[in-house]
Length: 70
Image (cartoon, rainbow, N blue to C red; front, side):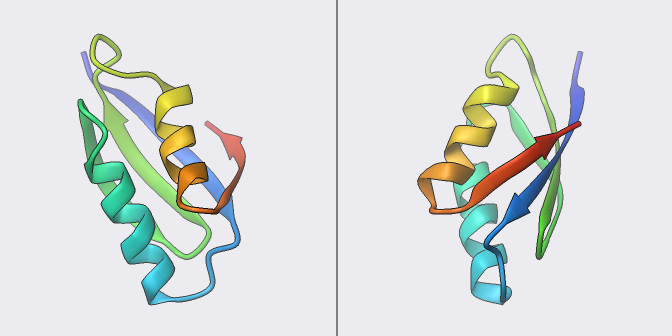
């Protein structure tokens, strides 16, 4: 069963940032991207294939700060 996840992300300032986060999230197995905007990302994910921690880490590896997850 898919689970929703919304990340509040600090450090995103432009369209390039949105593309960068979108690309990072698309590489995480089991993630479906619902929406990425400046400052946030909404996804659904398969908990049998990945976790919220892995998803947040993919964003951090792009150089952004995940300040909350819901």
